[in-house]
Length: 387
Image (cartoon, rainbow, N blue to C red; front, top):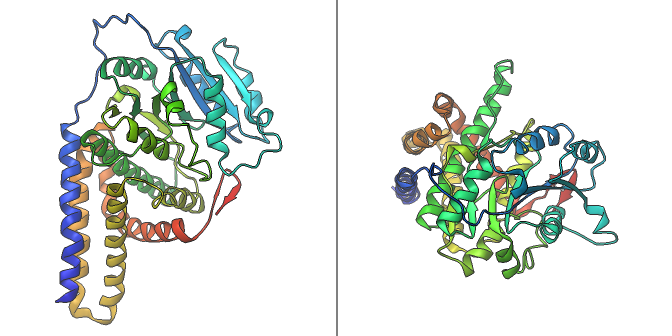
């Protein structure tokens, strides 16, 4: 009886939360740039990309940015080379565009002890940026032609000082092996769930989430909150931790831009090791958020998955309690599919939902591992080991 009670105490709040996220996502209207909009004060944008050993991706990333429909005289691209030892800097320099600039982080951090190179790279670029709106993305991302035009329009209309926007993983190649395809689709579904929660939570102001691959914020606001001061000792968190700092001063001016035109495409991890390292890095900030609501959500998710693992082991020895495992997994899977359907529809990836049920055990296990190691372990990021 006590096992059933604990199961319900964890499962019911989770179900209600996921249904609330779904309803909130559906309420969040998609934004389209008005055709008759006339900008009296066009926004000058500085796109910032921190790149370390990204020779395979940086060229495609920059090429997608320079194809913007937004006027070239109204945006610049600042690529910060973070001590790359490959051809990243040379490729970035090969673009003969007036509004593209390469910055060497090494020119600004000689003999400086850093724990967060990415934050320092972004901070350095912001100091040199001409734009009043900072837009960040990653070197392995591809953006759409209407990306900056839509962001600028939404920024000018909404009055937001911080804008989170959607990110999605690239389509999986048909030539991939079944195991590789499953691994990448698993990542895509997991990531879309996070994106749906991000949009819903920011819209309803429940708690704040975002991804640094697609962010926009005012340069002056970055300085108002003293940039990354106070969080610069944490290797990651250039997105969410900054978002929480800004939210304290501008609680009503944080927005999520739900628009197909601003979806940024990024790459899945190629190996299980890289994937686990990424998720450990994300989980490592769980106890650093000042917002107790997001901490409570993270703990609920973690303990529900931990409890399912416990019941799975327990039912091996007590087969009569196997129904608890069946109850937990069935209800959890059903409510998550219910939530994911409109989210995958927005990203035009509904077909991936067929893979969701077989991926459920892996999701439960990785959540348990990443959550634990995020608190008590270490991870490797950009060939640097972080504790």
